Length: 464
Image (cartoon, rainbow, N blue to C red):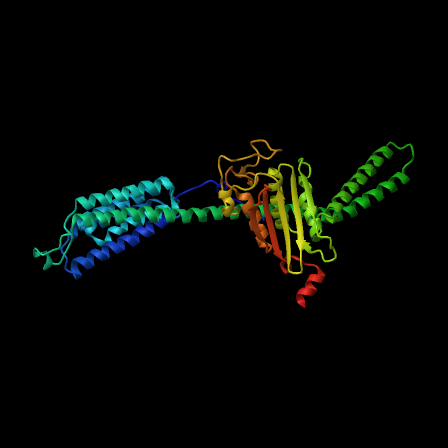
């Protein structure tokens, strides 16, 4: 499986499809036109019908021009989209100026362009559009044409709203712009972060699956190439026997036999990669943990794996890349920040299997414990580097939130990826700091045994 991303993970790219803005503006044009027609002809309210329809017609002309000059699938840049949304704010301000300003109940439509910007554009653009909307609301609150009323009310009995009431409407509008804009941006930002983090998870899992598949490919290649190499060896032996001992071709045929034998040796090595202990489809939990721990034993940190004394009912687990990567990331994280020791304790009952990884390092930052495992967790200014890394290597986030290879510093995807992969296997994870006077972090991974144990005994027990 090959995955590709249009942009590097972790970078933020903002913008809107032109087709989306055009469709939204057509909807606004239809609503504005219908409102003007109903107010003027059905309700018999007096309003400058010509000027209002001209303002709406200008938006319709702009929409047609955009549609004719640009393909609908074009994605606007942040600046281009900002200009179009700014026009929508100004167009609404012009309509409100003609129809009563802030006393017009449709004044709250100033929220719409800011909300669109908050969900798709950069925070700076959203703030600028919010300021523009609030400024336009203030202008039409101070200077506007009279609010349309029916002819009977307009004879001198039309109500006049107090200035303090209009000021309150402006304050409510400004607060709504700020609150709804921030909320919409935060929701959209979390959605973007989660989408990119899940894409990174899929990339990591695809890479691990590809590496695991190489074992099988190696075994298949060795099997397929073994027969022709054996044939070459036999033919070379027959040629040596058929030639005189002083023939100049004896040395060449001897070299051919030597190289064929060398190829057979290489293929035997590849076969061992496909049939040794590493790629077993199912392994006891003790072997799984040893596979996970082995790459981290040479970093000067003592790693102790503790298993229960009983061994007859040891869980048998399907060996898969997601499980190995998830546990490996947690162990690596502990090794990165341990002062001298990492303890891995496995325990199991008939109902549950648990693996707890504890280190004697500084522990997790207290302010981040509740959000560990979420994508893009960051604690800038408190970074520490793994002992065997150069600064340009993989980045770490906070006190131990490791970032996968090739990702930017400060993203915190490592723990998120590990947590996601382990949860796919049915696990629950908890992140804690050790109780005083001890220090360090503790990560516990727990599975229902029926979800992880594939031994025959477990299946019999579950069936019973």
